[in-house]
Image (cartoon, rainbow, N blue to C red; front, side, top):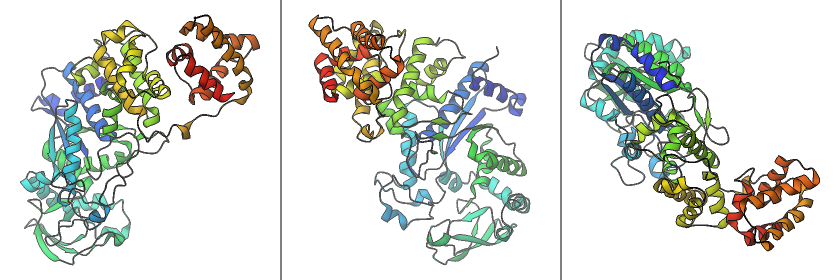
Amino acid sequence: MPYKLWPHKEAQRISRHHKMQDGEGPIIFETGYGPSGLPHIGTFAEVARTTFVMEAFKHQFPGREIHLIVFSDDLDGLRSLPENIPGHDMLKAHMGKPLSSIPDPYGEQSSFAGYMNNRLCHFLDHYGFTYEFISSTQTYQSGRFDEGLKRVMDHHDEIHQLFTAEIAEEKRSSWSPFFPICEQCGAIYTTHVEAIHPDQYAIDYACNQDGGGKYQPCGYVGTTSITGGRVKVGWKVDWALRWFSFGVDYEMHGKDLLHSAKLSSQICRILGGSPPLTYKYELFLDENGAKISKKIGNGIAMEQWQKYAPLGALLHFLLENPNKARRMGMPLLPRIIDDYLKALRTQDRNDPDKPLWFIDRLQHQHDADNIEANDVTFSLLVNVADNLGLHDSGLLYDYAARQGKSVTDNEMFFRELCDKAINYVSDDQLQKDSDAPSVDEKYMVYLPEFRQNLQTLVEQDNYTADAIQNAAFAVTRAHDLNQPEWFRFLYSALLRKEKGPRIGTFFQVLGPERVLEMIDRLL
């Protein structure tokens, strides 16, 4: 069957992989992240997208074993201080040291990396992902990388030549794939390799690098083995080392790592391994178009997704074409959730070439069934809660339940959605006023007439959603107004939003007193 969704196409690529032809061992998928800051949504996205491919692979090749590794590069050193992490005064004394040997600024885990690793695993476990978590520190120290490290030393000159061909000439003689961990101060970025001893798999080093004033070298000079966790290799070599040591068959990466992936593939071959199939994806951007960063902490944090959005909405967002840069930020969240609700209303979840098929498999349960094309959207729930000043999600659900039977048939899902809408509008960081759209003043002259139309409906005891909608249209017909511009004016002037729910339905919920009061404030 010719599938259209990208995970199925990736499964077909994997089917042509050499190990598939050999029929030996499981297909190994890997994702990696650096715990130098709080794990952001990009980290989760890589695991989720890889899992989409795994689900497609299981569907097409049900008899083949697969395995997912989530690798944490926690032996890497701390290069900078993340803006959204506390304890900067304490952390400054540990700059350049491995993340796994720096104290946890939150005081909850045994190390800085331990806290970040715990947050990632908590998030993945919360959503039921199946994976093997592997720590770089434990892998180096256990000796699991020792064979690969020896091969790096055996092929030192070849790797050196390959790597240094692309760096400045004055840096080539001092470059080394090895980063010794200082035996005296414990730092990794303060050391410099002085000589190598290939026959002994050892190196001479000095702790004398200050990184332009960022680090505090202790001056120690010594000799150390490259095995047993005493050294780490630079990350491009490290990436190849993982592929070689774990037998990785498939890995995704951001477009910023495209060249690195090519270089690591060459190094993997030098070590005697077969590099994996790789898949390049575009990067996530925040609502302003800036790249999401662990250091800055912009975009939407994983904890925010849990608090404000159903998992299905996030998975639906991630199933969109990974080769297109996607914006995600708090102001964009309602639209992202509404896109998911639309999919719930329109898609066949039994079709393996539809996003809902994948979402159900990752969630292991349905979010909702047979949702009608009614006016209950997340944007509507947010607007109702915001404009009514609601803090009780039960009251918000009572409103939603009046909009259609499919809401009560999926009570658990919509109650959770109302909980998340209340959480969203209660967030102090939304800064709604600063983002309010401009108001087209030329339509202000027609507002008294609209108010009178509504007042008449109240007096006639006909304050219904359809009647209110017709009252708004009556103004445009009486004065030959541009209908989209008129409704845009009502949203911006009364709701301080570019667009919103159906005016008739929304104003009926608000009630005539609240609506007339809102209009009177403008007149």
